[in-house]
Image (cartoon, rainbow, N blue to C red; front, side, top):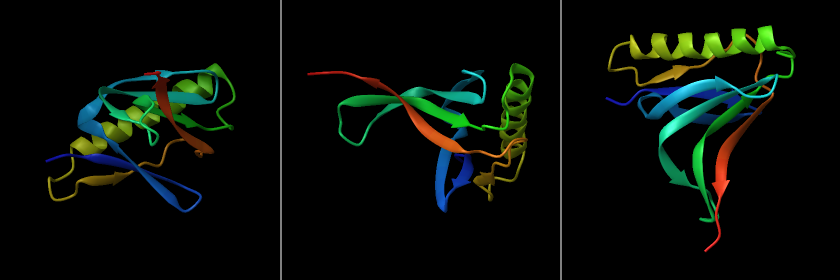
Length: 109
């Protein structure tokens, strides 16, 4: 059974397929990147989606960003330990999420 992390921001929900996560890493301060081991296509079809970038402006230094990363990894572990009848786990990271964006690799035909 697939498991998903659900992140909500501005009344919009985003699902992250946990089984497709290749790694979680720190980007710039305030950013945590979740990289997928599979790729999807962007809405225009002119890019490939490699993951998602979660920004928390209150995680404004390296130590806070690392805490944010650890809280996301811990949430993945918690989600995977829940019953198979609960495929969606609500992500509530240590610092409030202020932006969510796809990580895309743009290509031209």
